[in-house]
Image 1 (cartoon, rainbow, N blue to C red):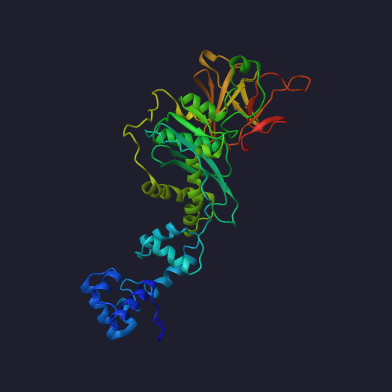
Image 2: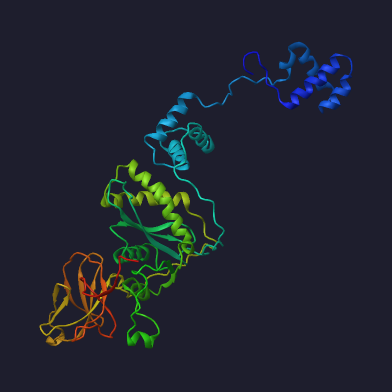
Length: 426
């Protein structure tokens, strides 16, 4: 109702016409009740209101009144200021949660969304119409399958250099089991994730992953030994999984590992906003901030598994986790009882009864803390202080003529002249 104008619906106009026929004597009240679809007593009340107030008698008594539970303009103004200021990077639901948890403003989620849309504020991201894909059922037990991947992204804002968030998620519960920021997606990040998973929860039955070259051999070189065995030797991460008895599953498309992809989509929305709110701008500060975020994230988004019994396997007794989950460089002892790995020289002390390790095939391991160990069979024969961890490169051996050797490629600690592939790439 605006001024002297009264806006009536089609139903109200029909009733006004029927009441007019009653007033002119051309229709009884009982006939009018049937036309309006009301009882006789209600028809009498409608006719009385129209006689006393005219067409306005057909309107509800609350027309023109402000609702008792209407949001005040002050609260509406505060919500809009927070959405464009402190929480400008938060999506609608995340913003609604912060209003309730941090600001003490208890509004409905749909109410907050309507306030933003009425003010002309669009959603933070556009949603594409979903494509039809067959859903893969979750694993029934926690620890039966873990998905992991890396997500390069400007996590600390567009004014900071991008880095890679390496993360892993349990398929049954949907919880983040390990995650950390690294400069790039590579072997060190996957080995770190694997060690965190094994030491915190246990050994999973399987790991679901893409075909990143840190995880799967993507080169076309096969040595004679590999052809006879029917498979290529695994990558550094593959060797660690084999030592722990973990079954690798390789996805051939991003949609196949949709749960880890959706996790990164959520983190690129929520985590970026939380990092911006906490003024976190460096990789080191982000790794300190992350554990608290993971605990809150898992409380909010975890789901109960179909079976309560867990599938994590305990670490076998006698298994050296530091050795199993580390960088592996096969080498041969020099005539001076030293081992050379790139530009690093490690001295080997005399063995039992003063034995020499010259020309002996040894196993050089760089642990995740940067320190070095040298093993002969299962005996630890040398140590070396920590050095910087470098991404290993798989290279072909060289023969005397300068061409590649048909022998199996090997891992080198520093860049080779003709590497087959390196781990940071796809």
